[in-house]
Amino acid sequence: MTEFLQQLVNGVTWGSVYALIALGYTMVYGILRLINFAHGDVYMLGAFMGLYASRWFHAGEDPSPIKALLVLLTSMILCALIGMVIERLAYKPVRKSPRLSALITAIGVSLLLENGGVLIFGASPRFFPQIVAQKNIELGMGVVLSNQQLIVLVVSFGLMLALRWLVLFTKVGKAMQAVSHNHMAASLMGISVDRIITFTFMIGSALAAAAGVLVALQSPKIEPYMGILPGLKAFVAAVLGGIGNIPGAVVGGLVMGIAEVLVTGYISPSYRDAIAFVMLIVILLVKPAGLFGKAVTEKV
Image (tube, rainbow, N blue to C red; front, top):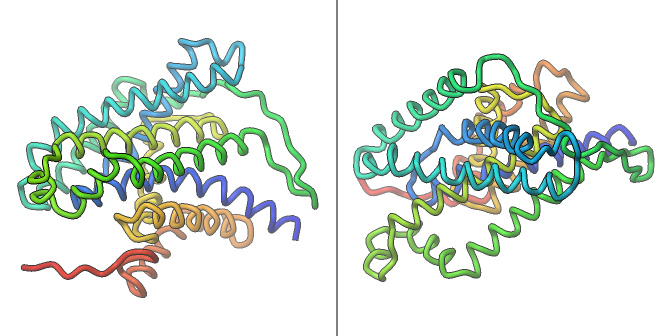
């Protein structure tokens, strides 16, 4: 029982990271009906932005909660700006083109970010400094939670709740909902569709950056290709929950994290990456719209 509870805690921790990345996928799809395959690479950039920010603030030499927060916020702001640039330069020109054009563009941006990362950061792995001194917390029944895992959980769920509040209770959130329903009707109501789309990319990129920094706290080895598999798994999580549905992305991420950790602990670590794609096949066969998604009939 102790081992199961420990695996469950670890699974929820990893699942909260997948949920943060999946939110970016689901938000962009909800607004543009576009799968942003470059999103996992923004997660990678978030880790590297956090690495350089930790050096600027000397967070690794003298760890403190304030410096760790500054590292996180700096990474999120920089990646939000990168997301804005990506949307304006890559996706906006093909917005009215066939969906295949946008999909190919997304793949191209992903390859550009990965190989650009190799060129700028180097192919060799870098090691993220320990900006938070590690301590273990006893939860009872032999279950241990590190303070780094606690930070991941608190920050992840805090950001998810903040996003939920933004979407439901603010003017910009209501504008996002309107644009997701119908671009033309939203523009006729005086909503700047371009600004809302750019804002959505910025929010999604900031969440991915936060995920990159949070993962680097626990797994300090970072490299330019680190976003490929987490990006794909987060996409599967978004599909699992119902892509375009924000609560669904959160649930899908948690399910993905728990399933991955349980498979690693009870079956074999070799199947850790395979479980994501098994779940994708199953959900597409059983409930193609996802757990919280609704089947939509498109006019041809």
